[in-house]
Figure 1 (cartoon, one colour):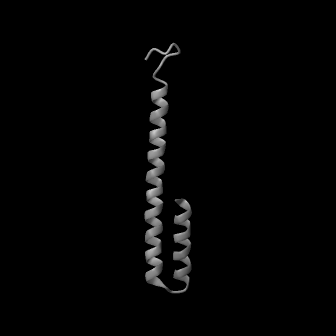
Figure 2 (tube, rainbow, N blue to C red; figure 1 turned 60 degrees about the vertical axis):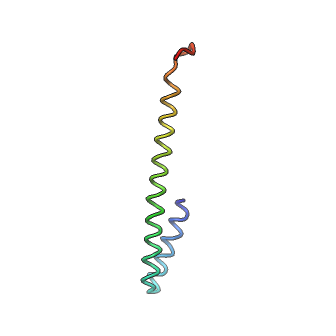
Amino acid sequence: MPHWSAIFIMAAIISALFAFGGFAGGTAAIAEILFYFFLAVLGAAFALRAAQRDDRNDHDDLGRG
């Protein structure tokens, strides 16, 4: 996902250099959406992983919950 954000931001920069304003704005918006979506997925993955680790540590060594 970060790879696609990087591709779209580079397309926005290149198109802005060649004065394609509408295309540059569109690709920059897509890159921004993908970037924030990636951050949300990353945060959810960290939260789920932390919840799984906490769940595993609730048991004692003898297997009694």
